Length: 203
Image 1: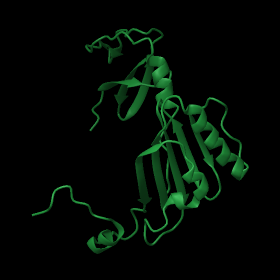
Image 2: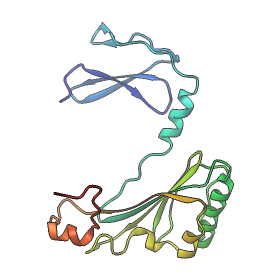
Image 3: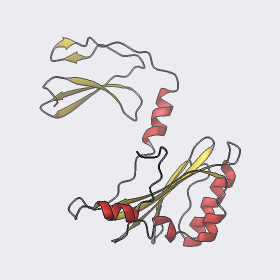
Image 4: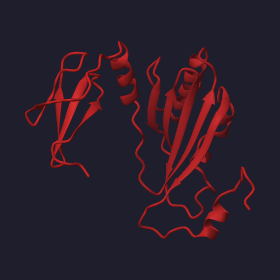
């Protein structure tokens, strides 16, 4: 429950300090022009919160975070997520492999040096991110399904391109998104859909 007059500090992409004043569920943003907090006014009262001095890299880091928003999905949808570690000196090889995928489908590749990229390839959508030592690839495929993991999103991606991905696997996840308006899965459905692995044997 948000009470009238309560406030919270927001970190938005411009990297400056903001004061959010929520009143009756409406949000007002007051932007300061300095890298040091200024006393903000809340219903005529000076803020009693602490004043912080920003780190020199704060704006740059916030720009990086907000340049990579989460992908929105509309059910029914599938997603396959990979994280592959190739090392901080293999960024060019990772980027070149992404460009090859774009060339296969005749789509415009990202600009040289890009660290994140989204594109609709027709049979699948891709969200790619390059981090310091690893890359993430999230593939999406929209469509109805009866068995959620029988045909994951990654099955729409060319197998030879996947086989040649640089690096070693850190993470591999399949996700199936169903509408909340559909029937619930039964316990028997879950047993059929999921492989259960116990870290500790059940009693």
